Image 1 (spheres, rainbow, N blue to C red):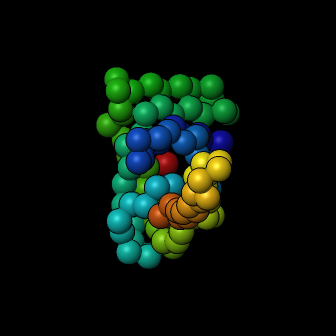
Image 2 (cartoon, rainbow, N blue to C red; image 1 turned 30 degrees about the horizontal axis):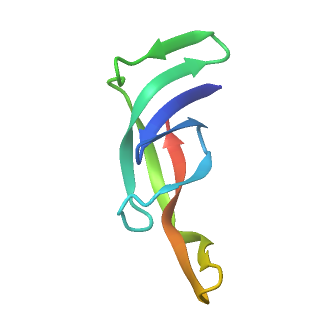
Amino acid sequence: MMFAVIKTGGKQYLVKKDDELYVDNLGLEQGKKTDVDMLAMFDTETKKVELGKPVLDKKVKIEVLENLKGDKIRVARFKSKVRYRKVRGYRHSLSKIKVVKI
């Protein structure tokens, strides 16, 4: 089984082939395929490990399955004795991706 550490959106993810995960919005349309940087790669069967300095020359191919919004986060401000209350909401833009090839 091949595993890879990829970097996208300023974060790192440990993935294998056919994994589906949610990452920060990539700005691509649904169904588009692209490559992302690979920081490290290892194979559990042959015990082979490759580390990048800082990235490897190889890329991981991914496909954007859908673009969506995450769960709503509510932020409340409150000050006692002055009747000040304010509630705001925020939903993060996400992309659901599938790892096609390592």
